Structure formats: structure tokens, C-alpha cells
Length: 327
Image (tube, rainbow, N blue to C red):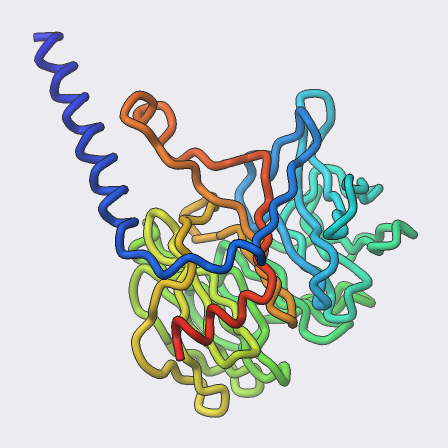
């Protein structure tokens, strides 16, 4: 009986591997390798520290990455890595931080630690506590003095950076699905976010008009972690593999146009049923991400869902690929 059970487990593992590999065969053409870079975390350090939420961001000018890491001898912190420099710099005062979000002027990073939203200067000049919100997932900057925060228990919140005041992004009654992973659209008039309810297959992307509080769904199944690109696209993740997708977007009508297409040949890493996915891009099209690790037959049972925890990948001029793949 035990032998039959082991055979069945082995067959199941084989089917999982084959399905993962088949799902990755229909991939977009590879990008120009000359535009690809990767940075290794220092020996002994682990990217993301195993916590839920997006664990990296990039400055608007595309020069500096902020990410979360820990090690066997050091607690979780935020680190700053300028592209092209040999080593990262610890951002002092960011112990136990997660969900970093860099300000539009590139001077500060907001993050969540000790059940509070905090703000750290990227030049290392100091950290301040803004407020203690309900449990959150996702922080976005609405200008330089207001944050929009994704709330695990319901609606989006606006948070004043200067005084910590919290107000609902929309005045509505009754219970709400979690509104997570906010991303501000140009002009600060609307916000993209993930509606999450259980498994990732149920996650969907919506948009809220910040003036009226009205919201509507844009992508109604298996879509999450959306961000707007200056090319006129919404970029988002889809599926167990967190495949990076994109679709054209009408910024005036707040509507998608056409059919989403896959825009990166590698699956991305991420944690949590809310769909947090580890990617970001700058205004000039520098894409940063971490990726899932390919499973083999031998280690599939132990490694399904594992990620490469020692590298951050960089693709420069990525908007050129985006416009080519989703014209």
C-alpha cells in the first residue's frame, strides 16, 4: 500500500511539473540580453525575509532600488542599492519593515513596521512614524503629503504624511472586500487596486475615482498587483506563477482596451492570497523584479512555490518591449 501511495505521489509531482513547464512554453520573445542585469544580495542575506507584501521598489529616475532583506544574524530591514554600485546600504531605523513605497520625488520611502506606517529619508537622515492604521497591504503616494493605503479588512484609506490623519478614500456603507495594492494613476484623480477574496483566482483589478469614490472592476478574474505605465498600459500579475501581463488603458475613460498579453518570459515571486507581487518600474522604463525558481522532478515536492531569494533582476528600457508586445 505504501509503495502504491509513493507511486501516486510521484505521478502527481510529475503532472505538476509538466503543467508548469507547458504553461511557460507560450512565452513572449526574449528581451535584448544587453538590457538585462542582476544584483546579488550579500552572502547570507535573503530577499523579502519571508513576509507578505511587495518587498521592493525603484526610484522614479530608475537609479536606486529599495528592498527588504534579512540574514541568519541580522533582523529584517530595508536596504538601498544604487544600480551600478557594488554593495547595498542599510537604511537605518527600518527594522522589521515591509511594503516599501518610494515617494514621487525619490527622497523618501514609506513602509510598514511595528504596526505603523513610517517614513525614512533615502539619504539616511532619519525615520519618522506617520500613523498606526488597520492591518494593511500596499502603500502608494498620492502626491508628496498623502498616502493611499490598502486595507486587509476593507476600503482604501487616505493618510496624511504630515499629521497622520486617516480618512476613507470613499464614503460608503456596509462591509467591503479587502482593497489591496493601490497604485495611483497620473493626475492623482484615480487609483488602481486589487479586490481580493480568498484564492488568487478570485482576485480582480478595479479602479476608483478619488473625487466621487465610485469604483468598478477592470479585469474580473485572476488579476492582481496592477500598476500604470507611462506607455498607456496597465501592467499586472496573473495566475499561480504570477505571470506579468499588460493591457492598453484609456486614461480618460478609465477603461481597458483590447486583450491582455504576457510581457515577461519568467514567473515572478510574491507571497500571500492578496496577490502582492515583487516587481516595479521607473518612469524611464527600468523594470525590477524577483523571480520564481524552476522546479525539477527531483525537488518538486520540496520546492513548489519557492523563489530565488538572493537576486534582484533589472531590465533596462523595458518599455520598448512593452510597446512591442502590446501595441
